[in-house]
Length: 120
Length: 107
Image (cartoon, rainbow over all chains, first blue to last red; front, side):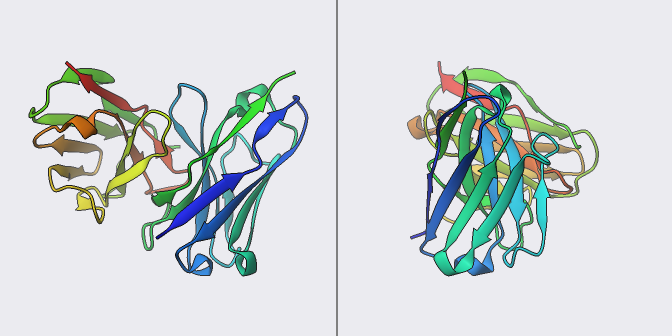
């Protein structure tokens, strides 16, 4: 069974940093591109970042470019999102999502999400 | 970025109804469209990809159609567990973008 479990969310002050993690199991992690998608409270879904299976290709939404860094450790079956210079508008539930095989940036499995709150 | 719109934004329906949700892309996306279902407090669930391909395990009452700029999600016979918010998403080009969602609630 595919499982994605996020952790690392919490309350942080504007300008602060946070590192999210996503532990994957139930599939060959090193064969799949992975993504972060977020959802602000009461709002819709926003793609944040993608990383290819071997970390060769990395993409970011303009809203986080230069502030967030996606990475992965295939030996540990883990995905990460380093978030710096956090703003109030980054407040959201952050989901780790697996890219559909052959499906580009569509997402077939999602974690339960971790809440990031940016507030003073 | 490609802008996705959905209509209606919300509506009420009854169990057993046939419902259709429309999604429109601001430019052609071929068939690079996915549909997701999200229930309150839960992660989104992939229903359909490539505009009309049913994800494994998704009931056959869900179907998708369309190509280019106009797409539809149809639920042939609404069940109680289908009351949720539905999002379309294009993955034709970077950045992938979602529609604003369509909330289906109980009449």
